[in-house]
Length: 358
Image (cartoon, rainbow, N blue to C red; front, side, top):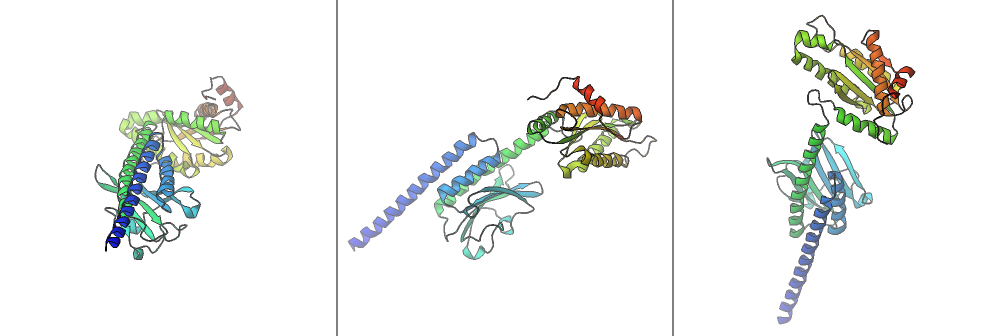
């Protein structure tokens, strides 16, 4: 009897020792994650390191993180089945099994009937924790961990993952807030187009990467008359409509629209000018059909000057200036047209000091 009791006590001590070591490991891991978070500038980088640590230290075989982004979800994931590669993808929805999560949940073997992402095999253990916005207690995503062995997740690991999810939730919210602030600092509040601060960064990025870029400077024809006859509120509405039409015209090509000042915009399209010209023409024609000024006898149209880098201009800033020169010629010719920069426009632009920092 004494021998049996001693054996039970020994087993209990061994179990407690294992739990203690596990808790120490989890505390160390959490400390390492906190230290890494201080030196990382993006949420994606943090998730790459976090999933790598969870795989290496905690022994899980697959990590997923679903984050709601407007009407879609972004999924960050890593799996031993993918040679531990860190990946991200956009999906339309979160899996049905995760939609109604209100708290942490350990799936039974019978509930694990399919993979959460097609390229991953069905695991034998799955654990999920919702990501919460602590301002309104809403749920905006989930952390999901899987293992190929049954009953992998213990009370200790579940408690650790629940604490870790709080940390992830706070960082995700902070990341989204920073992205919003950054976007607002580079966006024109009236039209929703980018502002000149963004334009400078975009042009410098194109220059450093030596990427192809077609630049068009756009001026709204007869805009002063619209303001004088219909008022500034109607004028603002016209500018908003033109900006929305321009953004819609170039979105599928990876283009951007910048409010250059007043009633002028700059359009950037990362394709050669031979391919971009028809896009600019379609946009120009579309402006005429913006049904906002039909009650006056002055049509709202646009005139565009266009140039490209690097085949026409030596740097993207020069391309903008040359396009502006082409725009002036277009206004003199009668407005409502797309005018390509010529050698004279480019020579004039060289007289100005280049703004690109090499």
